[in-house]
Length: 376
Image 1: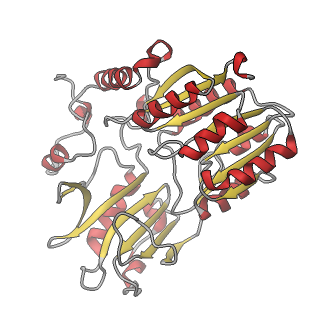
Image 2: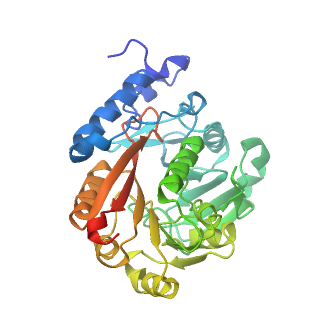
C-alpha cells in the first residue's frame, strides 16, 4: 500500500471513521499515480483483445481530484437526526464533509441536518443533487410541511433550486414521473458551457476531461458539411452544438423528457427524438434516408452499453464510417466491441479518462472505423 494515501491532503476529522468505512472510493488509500496505474491494469485485462491500441489513461487535473463530484444520490436515514451517505450492505455510512463531494453538497447536507423535520413529518428517502439542482425524494404521495425551507438561502448554498419528488416506492427507480414540486428557486440551471439542465440531468464529472474526450471524438469523427451525424444517448445536448458547428446535419436521441427539452434548447435547430435508441430506429433510419450523406456516430450509453437492436442496426444498416463510443463499463464495452468488429469495424484507439478520481471506476472512449473491405 502506498505511503502517500489519496486523502492525505484531508486533515483528520471526527468523521475519519466514516470515510474509512465508505464503500464509494475504493482507491482512497492510494496515491493518485498508483490509483491511475491500477485502473490502467484493470482495463488492460478487461479489454485484452485491444491492448495494442489502449492508450495511457488521461489523468484528472490536480484541482479536480477532490471535491469534484457535483452529481450524487445519497441515502437518507434518521437516527436522532438526519444522516446522508452510502449503504454498505444495509448499514448507512454517513458522509459528512465528504472530500469527494462538491462543497455545495456538504453545505446542503449540513443545512438539512439542522433544519429538516423528522421522518414522521418528512419521510425522506434520498438526497439527489446534479450541479446546482437539488432534490429531496420522499416516500409519500402527500406534500409534507415545507415551512422550514424559509430558513434556507439558496445563494449561500450555491444552489439554483430545491425540489421535492414524491415517490412512495422510491428504490430501484429514484424519481416518480409525476411527483415533482419545486420548493425554492428556478426550474433550470446553466453550466459553465452555457447549457441548460434540470434536476434529473445526467452530468459527466470532471468537466475539463469531458471536454477533452469530446474534442478527441470530434477530431476522430471529422464531421463536416454533408455528413449525417448521429448523437445517441445525447443527454442535455452537450455534444450536439459541437457537432452542429461542423456544418453537418445532426440528430440526437435521448430517453429522458427533461433532457430532451434541454437538448432542444441547447442546440437550436437540431432534431432530437425522445425515446430509447432501439425503439427509435425507424425514425432514425427515415432521417438518414432523407439525407443520403456519409454517416458518423457518437454514443454515450449507460452502463448496460449499446442496446442489442441498436448495435445490430449500426453494424448492418446505418454503417457509420466512424463511431466514437464513450463507455463507463469495460465489460459491456468489450461485448459491444467484439460484436462490432465481427460486423466489419476496426477498433482504432481506446482512450481512458479518469472521470472518477479516488474510485475504481474509469471511462473509455473507443474509436472505430469501418474496414474498406466492408464497404466503408
